[in-house]
Amino acid sequence: MIRDTTSTDSFGGLTRRTLLEGSAAALLMSAGTAAAQSANAPGAAGLAPQGAGRLPMSFRINSSRIEASLDPRTSLLDALREEIGLTGSKKGCDHGQCGACTILVNGRRINACLTLAIMHQDDEITTVEGLATGDVLHPMQAAFVKHDGFQCGYCTPGQICSAVGMLREAEAGWPSHASADAARGRFALSDAEIRERMSGNLCRCAAYPNIVAAIRDAAREG
Figure 1: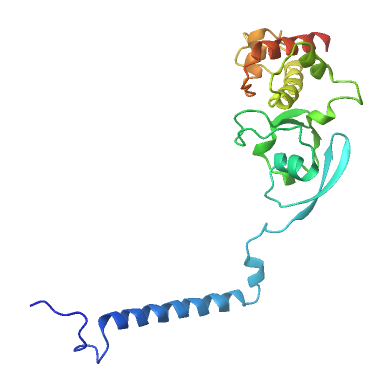
Figure 2: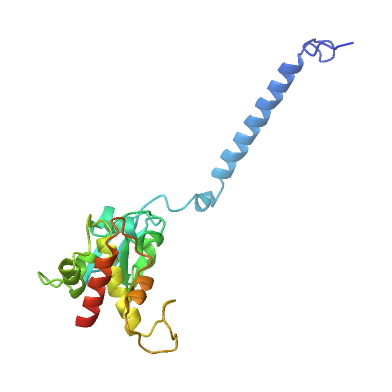
């Protein structure tokens, strides 16, 4: 025999559905009361999620001290572009794959989209805006102009900053995968060396031959 689950025979006048709904409501009310009591308990404020507000931060950017109030979760790239107004560094992939956001931190090239601004308050940060000296272009900037090392120009700031950092690495004796002898103290920057060392910077316009020529020229003059 099929039992009618909506009958009131076994539940003192209550249907099964009414009983289940009442039990669920009681559980929800109990959980809400417990949560409220926990939130009001001594020291509960210290358990609240952190990082929702802004913090005062101080940076050394292009030889100038810059103060900013930032969310501690802000990337260095977003801080430079959206908060400080240095828009030379471009946001391409935002995943560290294209190199358009490359800047120099303590003389070394990094992808600004992959690091938090709050981590670099005591560092020397150089963006493409800080390479020139007044109206005199940096040798790498001048070489890119001379050799037409850009087309749309979107990747160019990252290419130039990366090239400046790359030459410093080569001068310091850092080998690359294209180096024939990794134990050598200095490396002749052949086209293969330059291409390998700059492989983290992509050019959607494919101006690579001119970029390589510009870097090779700047390396000779430097």
